[in-house]
Image: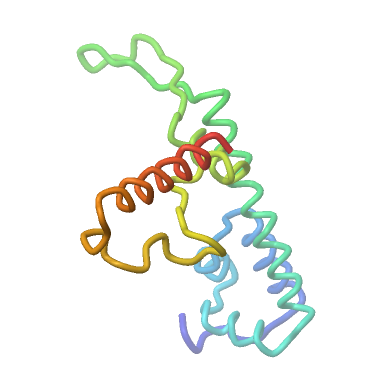
Length: 155
């Protein structure tokens, strides 16, 4: 495709942006126009208005992906059931994985994978090796780390 039909026209730009909204994929959008994706990136870097339109189209594409993820997570999809090569019924399948991703995206403070535990002002919890401390100090520090971890779990 490189070197072929590389003239940028308003129609090609509209076609590219529409495809980017639908597919959310630059390569697929570029293929729709018959213009190499790298050429589109070159035009984007040299045109602030086009870059803004590109970003808006890409955002619409992402929203469409989110809509589809929600549909599959909440409404499910009909999956055919076959017996001896014949479709005999369908069963509704829901995507727990998509539901988890939606929760993590929209409530990261609650559903993120892990929380960092740090000492005062975000610094390290320990500045020295625990084995260098006496048993009472070691127990006190371990208890404070456990207390901090428990507090973070409830927040």
